[in-house]
Image (cartoon, rainbow, N blue to C red; front, side, top):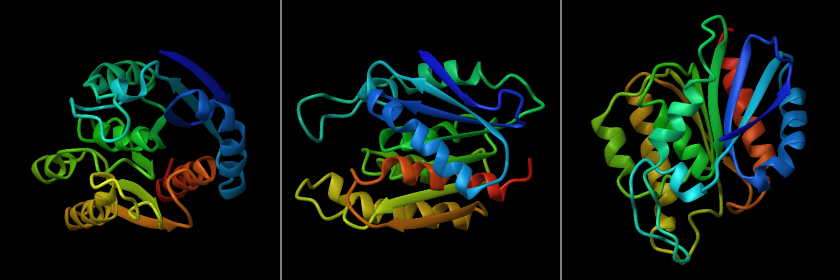
Length: 210
């Protein structure tokens, strides 16, 4: 996994974000948007995955669009990301967009290393994930969730569950005492990914003392 670093290397806050080539092209915009929303210094480490559907999936699942199934490489990806979090003087947040947002949320169920999760338009439709949340305890107390107001309005039966499932996720987390917000953005899943991710990270940064 190749990593790209942005911002202040000595900052007390470290943002970790799994990305693909499309995300990398928008990353400078995202950083600018974050800086507009918080005055806190931060370092962002973009972790480029080689196989999006495999490297970010917590377990195997059939394809819901196209023909590419989902793998079970999330554990390996998280192991590499945690190697970037060994400096205990830093505060670490994990976040991402779409399947990377789901991965970030899943990661917080595997470790308490992250002080917050910034899950922007996460793939909450992922088979079995709501049930997983019901059966396990999360390792962070600050979680941002968002979704586009048109994301659940799709003909794909699996993906159409995203609205119901993200509402359920918010309720589950809140009931367990997690500081959680669910923000609705204008548009479908493919609109303003950089801005939505920036809003997610900025919210987390402002909620946690670092």
